[in-house]
Length: 207
Image (cartoon, rainbow, N blue to C red; front, side, top):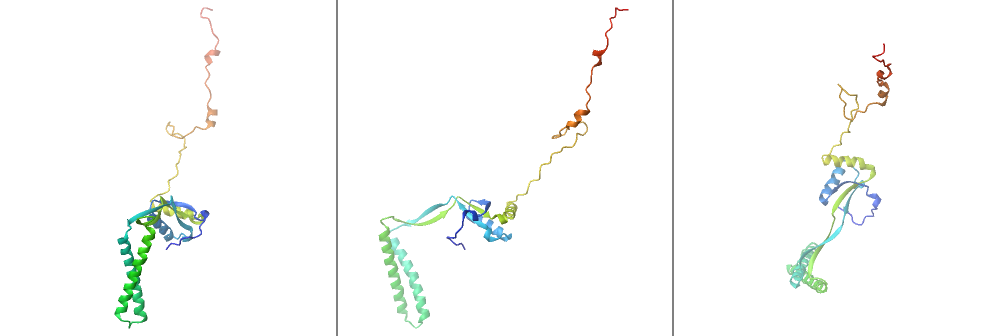
């Protein structure tokens, strides 16, 4: 059961843990959170992109007004009939039928009056509804981590393993990906010098 008109501020709805295109799916997710011991007061269903939809159910006319008034009067008459039977069961059957007939007549008269006033504005009957583009299930910060874990498990998601970079030294003369040679190893390398340039030159013709 929902209570309309509650005073809910923007900061009281928490953060989104799941989003659904249909309201029934959002209700199911909220029920899963409650079954997982999330406090119900921490959960909210927020409709985004609200718009009103007026569905045309039929054409208005005197015949439609008479049928609607007859049904309403019949229901009212049955209710009055039941009350009379409880208060005074000894009332004759003719009184019951008279009560039913009077209620049906009143219902038709009220329906005709309503149609006479309404027909200047529109000539159709309709039903108004408010729908949303999508619905977010939000949870307050006190339960946000547990709620996200529950929603991830419901969608079959698992946390990814961290990526490990192997920085071990090369094996068998092969350099592994991601390995960097330490800068200290450069100090052990001794540059090779060519000593031929320092040797004295001798002239073969000199004795």
